[in-house]
Figure 1 (tube, rainbow, N blue to C red):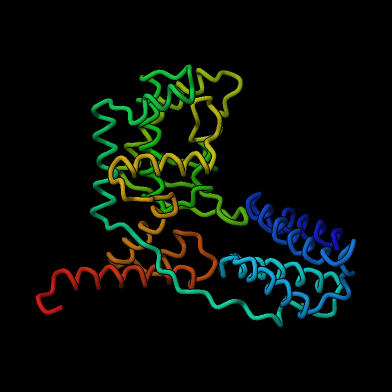
Figure 2: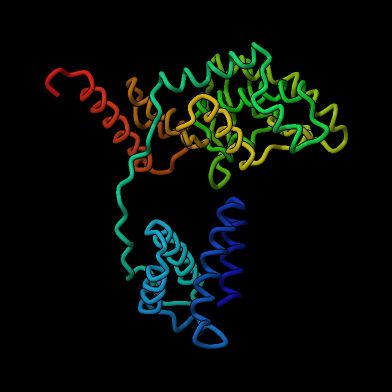
Length: 324
């Protein structure tokens, strides 16, 4: 069975263009299932003996471990994909995971900041940049002994460009850090984005984001100059060593500035993508157009933003209507 898993992962990487993050998740989920099957014996049963009862027992084991329903559902989805591949390869007559019901998940409507809150948040970064303030000069020196106040102030320009672009184009954080210089058309204000499965799409970005990018470009050149040969000349967003920023670093940047504006905000990069879609919908944008901009394969994935938009309307109604 382990050989079948390895072949499945190679198929995802080479034929489906799965991202490293997706491959890690699939490997983790399938190896966890393999470890469970190996518990009563030295080795798991052969692939040909896999049936839905074994999978149900495994899900029951996960529930006993108090795993969240969303995590259980994801692991079941991984098994379904794996066994579907096994059927395609002729190793199994049918997919045993298809007979196992997905746990019923609660409908979660993403919390979305209002357009006014987002504007105030991004404008506060502009004011910080104009004033030459640094949000974490002491922290920068503590973590990087060679960093000075001037460098930290310059990075505010980079951070503002990151936040403006996340909201302006509704990017996934992986799409943002994957941007190369050649992907940015500053004249027409368009981005070429590589989304899930390395599928490319073209998305516009607004004037505020363009202004932030123009302010960041000299900073990027300075970061590359200091890095010399170790820098990544293709990447748009760089760290202080001139290397491509990671998704984790962007997450920290978003949280840092959000906390400066409002201590109660637990903002993450995907929240800006949610806000992008919800605000477009609230202002009358077509759902199909939003689907294209977000790079969603299915319209049903985009439709969750209609619920967030309706919820915001109800909140406004409850606060404003005299007989609500």
